[in-house]
Amino acid sequence: MTRAAIQLYTLRNVDQPFTDVLERVADAGFDGVEFAYRVTEADPDDVVATLDETGLEPAGAHVGIDGLEDDFDETVALYDRLGVENVVVPWLDAEHFESREAVATAADRLAELNAKLADHGMDLHYHNHDHEYTDLGNENGENGFDAFVDATDCGIELDLGLGLHAGDDVVARLRSLGARSELVHLKDFDTAAGESVPVGEGDLDLDGIAAAVDENDSDWLIYEYEGADPLASLDTAAERTQDLCR
Image (cartoon, rainbow, N blue to C red; front, side):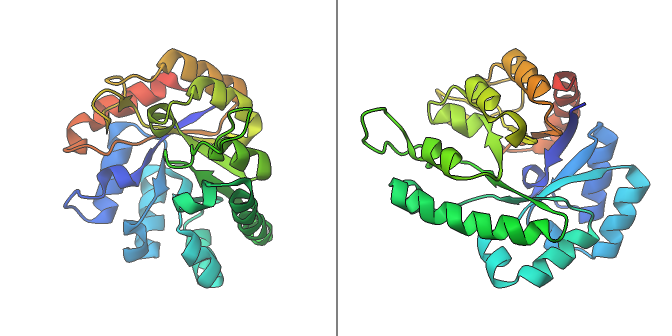
Protein backbone atom coordinates (compact mmCIF):
# COMPACT_ATOMS: atom_id res chain seq x y z
CA MET A 1 0.00 0.00 0.00
CA THR A 2 1.20 3.49 -0.85
CA ARG A 3 1.91 5.73 2.12
CA ALA A 4 1.77 9.52 2.45
CA ALA A 5 4.87 11.61 3.12
CA ILE A 6 5.94 15.23 2.84
CA GLN A 7 9.04 16.64 1.20
CA LEU A 8 10.49 18.76 3.99
CA TYR A 9 11.59 21.42 1.50
CA THR A 10 7.94 22.46 1.84
CA LEU A 11 8.67 23.59 5.41
CA ARG A 12 12.17 24.93 4.84
CA ASN A 13 11.31 28.44 6.07
CA VAL A 14 9.33 27.44 9.17
CA ASP A 15 11.06 29.13 12.08
CA GLN A 16 11.00 26.19 14.47
CA PRO A 17 13.58 23.62 15.56
CA PHE A 18 13.83 20.79 13.08
CA THR A 19 12.53 18.20 15.50
CA ASP A 20 9.50 20.40 16.21
CA VAL A 21 8.81 20.50 12.47
CA LEU A 22 8.88 16.70 12.41
CA GLU A 23 6.38 16.57 15.28
CA ARG A 24 4.09 18.99 13.44
CA VAL A 25 4.23 16.80 10.34
CA ALA A 26 3.26 13.75 12.37
CA ASP A 27 0.40 15.64 14.03
CA ALA A 28 -0.92 16.61 10.57
CA GLY A 29 -1.26 12.94 9.68
CA PHE A 30 1.65 12.13 7.37
CA ASP A 31 3.27 8.70 7.59
CA GLY A 32 6.74 9.77 6.55
CA VAL A 33 9.16 12.50 5.57
CA GLU A 34 11.57 13.06 2.73
CA PHE A 35 14.61 14.93 3.99
CA ALA A 36 16.20 17.95 2.33
CA TYR A 37 18.71 20.56 3.46
CA ARG A 38 17.92 21.30 7.13
CA VAL A 39 18.48 17.73 8.27
CA THR A 40 22.22 18.07 7.69
CA GLU A 41 22.32 20.83 10.32
CA ALA A 42 20.38 18.85 12.95
CA ASP A 43 21.70 16.39 15.52
CA PRO A 44 21.10 12.99 13.89
CA ASP A 45 20.46 11.34 17.27
CA ASP A 46 17.71 13.88 18.00
CA VAL A 47 16.21 13.30 14.57
CA VAL A 48 16.19 9.53 15.01
CA ALA A 49 14.65 9.89 18.47
CA THR A 50 11.89 12.11 17.09
CA LEU A 51 11.18 9.70 14.24
CA ASP A 52 10.87 6.91 16.79
CA GLU A 53 8.61 8.95 19.07
CA THR A 54 6.29 10.11 16.29
CA GLY A 55 6.26 6.95 14.19
CA LEU A 56 7.36 8.88 11.12
CA GLU A 57 9.39 6.90 8.59
CA PRO A 58 12.06 8.26 6.25
CA ALA A 59 10.65 7.99 2.73
CA GLY A 60 13.95 9.18 1.31
CA ALA A 61 16.37 12.07 1.14
CA HIS A 62 17.26 14.63 -1.51
CA VAL A 63 21.05 14.68 -1.75
CA GLY A 64 23.02 16.78 -4.21
CA ILE A 65 25.11 14.78 -6.65
CA ASP A 66 28.28 16.69 -5.70
CA GLY A 67 27.90 15.60 -2.09
CA LEU A 68 27.45 12.01 -3.16
CA GLU A 69 30.42 12.02 -5.51
CA ASP A 70 32.82 14.11 -3.40
CA ASP A 71 31.96 12.96 0.12
CA PHE A 72 30.35 9.59 -0.46
CA ASP A 73 31.29 7.81 2.76
CA GLU A 74 30.37 10.70 5.06
CA THR A 75 27.13 11.37 3.21
CA VAL A 76 26.04 7.74 3.21
CA ALA A 77 26.94 7.36 6.88
CA LEU A 78 24.61 10.23 7.83
CA TYR A 79 21.62 8.96 5.89
CA ASP A 80 22.23 5.39 7.00
CA ARG A 81 22.08 6.65 10.61
CA LEU A 82 18.74 8.28 9.80
CA GLY A 83 17.35 5.07 8.33
CA VAL A 84 17.20 6.34 4.75
CA GLU A 85 17.05 3.71 2.01
CA ASN A 86 16.05 5.94 -0.93
CA VAL A 87 18.62 8.53 -2.01
CA VAL A 88 17.31 11.04 -4.54
CA VAL A 89 19.44 13.25 -6.77
CA PRO A 90 17.21 16.34 -6.90
CA TRP A 91 18.84 18.21 -9.78
CA LEU A 92 21.13 17.94 -12.75
CA ASP A 93 21.87 21.07 -14.77
CA ALA A 94 20.05 21.63 -18.06
CA GLU A 95 23.21 20.91 -20.07
CA HIS A 96 22.84 17.23 -19.16
CA PHE A 97 19.62 16.99 -21.19
CA GLU A 98 20.57 18.89 -24.35
CA SER A 99 21.59 15.84 -26.42
CA ARG A 100 21.59 12.06 -26.30
CA GLU A 101 25.36 12.18 -25.73
CA ALA A 102 24.95 14.47 -22.71
CA VAL A 103 22.20 12.24 -21.35
CA ALA A 104 24.45 9.17 -21.74
CA THR A 105 27.20 10.86 -19.72
CA ALA A 106 24.75 11.74 -16.95
CA ALA A 107 23.37 8.20 -17.01
CA ASP A 108 26.88 6.79 -16.52
CA ARG A 109 27.41 8.99 -13.45
CA LEU A 110 24.14 7.85 -11.93
CA ALA A 111 24.83 4.20 -12.72
CA GLU A 112 28.13 4.39 -10.85
CA LEU A 113 26.46 5.97 -7.83
CA ASN A 114 23.60 3.47 -7.96
CA ALA A 115 26.06 0.58 -7.78
CA LYS A 116 27.93 2.11 -4.85
CA LEU A 117 24.72 2.85 -2.95
CA ALA A 118 23.48 -0.69 -3.52
CA ASP A 119 26.49 -1.93 -1.56
CA HIS A 120 25.06 0.01 1.40
CA GLY A 121 21.50 -1.24 0.94
CA MET A 122 20.31 2.01 -0.65
CA ASP A 123 18.54 2.78 -3.92
CA LEU A 124 19.17 5.78 -6.17
CA HIS A 125 16.40 7.89 -7.70
CA TYR A 126 16.30 11.03 -9.83
CA HIS A 127 13.82 13.87 -9.29
CA ASN A 128 12.91 15.93 -12.33
CA HIS A 129 12.13 19.61 -12.75
CA ASP A 130 10.98 21.04 -16.09
CA HIS A 131 14.31 21.80 -17.75
CA GLU A 132 14.83 18.13 -18.60
CA TYR A 133 12.14 18.33 -21.29
CA THR A 134 14.45 19.85 -23.91
CA ASP A 135 13.42 19.17 -27.50
CA LEU A 136 16.20 17.02 -28.94
CA GLY A 137 15.18 17.89 -32.48
CA ASN A 138 14.80 14.35 -33.76
CA GLU A 139 11.98 13.13 -35.95
CA ASN A 140 10.11 11.25 -33.22
CA GLY A 141 9.77 14.33 -31.03
CA GLU A 142 11.88 12.90 -28.22
CA ASN A 143 12.84 15.23 -25.40
CA GLY A 144 15.72 15.11 -22.95
CA PHE A 145 13.64 13.51 -20.23
CA ASP A 146 12.48 10.75 -22.57
CA ALA A 147 16.10 10.00 -23.43
CA PHE A 148 17.11 10.13 -19.76
CA VAL A 149 14.44 7.64 -18.71
CA ASP A 150 15.53 5.32 -21.53
CA ALA A 151 19.23 5.60 -20.66
CA THR A 152 18.96 5.03 -16.90
CA ASP A 153 17.74 2.23 -14.68
CA CYS A 154 17.54 4.10 -11.38
CA GLY A 155 14.25 5.09 -9.80
CA ILE A 156 12.45 8.11 -11.20
CA GLU A 157 10.78 10.34 -8.62
CA LEU A 158 8.36 12.05 -10.98
CA ASP A 159 7.54 15.60 -9.94
CA LEU A 160 3.98 15.69 -11.19
CA GLY A 161 3.54 19.46 -11.08
CA LEU A 162 6.77 20.35 -12.84
CA GLY A 163 6.18 17.62 -15.41
CA LEU A 164 2.72 19.05 -16.04
CA HIS A 165 4.20 22.54 -16.31
CA ALA A 166 6.61 21.21 -18.96
CA GLY A 167 3.69 19.84 -20.98
CA ASP A 168 4.02 16.19 -20.02
CA ASP A 169 1.04 13.86 -19.67
CA VAL A 170 2.07 12.97 -16.14
CA VAL A 171 -0.54 10.25 -15.61
CA ALA A 172 0.66 8.44 -18.74
CA ARG A 173 4.27 9.07 -17.76
CA LEU A 174 3.65 7.66 -14.30
CA ARG A 175 2.06 4.54 -15.73
CA SER A 176 4.97 4.07 -18.12
CA LEU A 177 7.48 4.21 -15.27
CA GLY A 178 5.88 1.23 -13.55
CA ALA A 179 8.09 -0.20 -10.79
CA ARG A 180 10.60 2.64 -11.21
CA SER A 181 8.11 5.03 -9.57
CA GLU A 182 8.55 3.92 -5.96
CA LEU A 183 8.57 7.60 -4.99
CA VAL A 184 6.11 10.09 -6.51
CA HIS A 185 6.12 13.85 -5.89
CA LEU A 186 2.63 15.21 -5.41
CA LYS A 187 3.20 18.85 -6.28
CA ASP A 188 -0.03 20.39 -7.54
CA PHE A 189 0.45 23.19 -10.04
CA ASP A 190 -1.53 26.08 -11.46
CA THR A 191 -0.25 26.00 -15.03
CA ALA A 192 -1.77 29.35 -16.01
CA ALA A 193 -0.10 31.11 -13.10
CA GLY A 194 3.05 28.98 -13.37
CA GLU A 195 3.21 28.25 -9.67
CA SER A 196 2.93 25.54 -7.06
CA VAL A 197 -0.35 25.43 -5.13
CA PRO A 198 -1.65 23.31 -2.24
CA VAL A 199 -2.80 19.88 -3.39
CA GLY A 200 -6.34 19.96 -4.76
CA GLU A 201 -6.12 23.58 -5.89
CA GLY A 202 -4.27 23.09 -9.17
CA ASP A 203 -4.50 21.31 -12.50
CA LEU A 204 -3.28 17.82 -11.63
CA ASP A 205 -5.63 14.95 -12.48
CA LEU A 206 -5.71 13.61 -8.94
CA ASP A 207 -8.02 10.68 -9.71
CA GLY A 208 -5.78 9.60 -12.57
CA ILE A 209 -2.71 9.96 -10.40
CA ALA A 210 -4.25 7.92 -7.59
CA ALA A 211 -5.09 5.14 -10.05
CA ALA A 212 -1.58 5.14 -11.56
CA VAL A 213 0.12 5.14 -8.17
CA ASP A 214 -2.07 2.22 -7.14
CA GLU A 215 -1.37 0.38 -10.40
CA ASN A 216 2.39 0.87 -9.93
CA ASP A 217 2.21 -0.07 -6.24
CA SER A 218 4.37 2.97 -5.45
CA ASP A 219 5.79 3.04 -1.94
CA TRP A 220 5.38 6.74 -1.20
CA LEU A 221 3.24 9.61 -2.45
CA ILE A 222 5.18 12.67 -1.30
CA TYR A 223 3.47 16.04 -0.94
CA GLU A 224 5.38 19.19 -1.82
CA TYR A 225 4.32 22.81 -1.92
CA GLU A 226 6.60 25.73 -2.67
CA GLY A 227 4.23 28.59 -1.84
CA ALA A 228 3.88 30.86 1.16
CA ASP A 229 2.63 29.80 4.61
CA PRO A 230 2.78 26.03 4.11
CA LEU A 231 1.66 25.39 7.70
CA ALA A 232 -1.75 26.92 6.96
CA SER A 233 -2.63 24.13 4.53
CA LEU A 234 -0.61 21.33 6.12
CA ASP A 235 -3.48 19.42 7.78
CA THR A 236 -5.61 19.57 4.63
CA ALA A 237 -2.62 18.49 2.53
CA ALA A 238 -2.04 15.46 4.74
CA GLU A 239 -5.71 14.47 4.49
CA ARG A 240 -5.80 14.87 0.71
CA THR A 241 -2.53 12.99 0.22
CA GLN A 242 -3.80 10.16 2.40
CA ASP A 243 -7.04 10.06 0.39
CA LEU A 244 -5.00 9.42 -2.80
CA CYS A 245 -3.16 6.48 -1.25
CA ARG A 246 -4.82 3.10 -1.77
